Length: 87
Image (cartoon, rainbow, N blue to C red; front, side):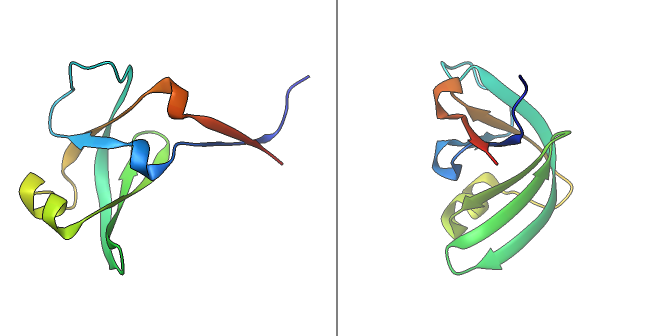
């Protein structure tokens, strides 16, 4: 029996990088930054990997990583961070 719902990866569990990391975070997706939106937390990055992701980062992280619209990045997270939300 298939269940309907969606998959959630908490934003605090997502690590952004310019290259594919060699780490214990087995899930690493390459994507392109579609939008960078200023908000009261810092910035929201909308990243398309074939699956859309919204990732929140601080202004310091945005500057340190030199992130820009249309840039390719890697999103990495551990499988234990993935949650299925049934609806």
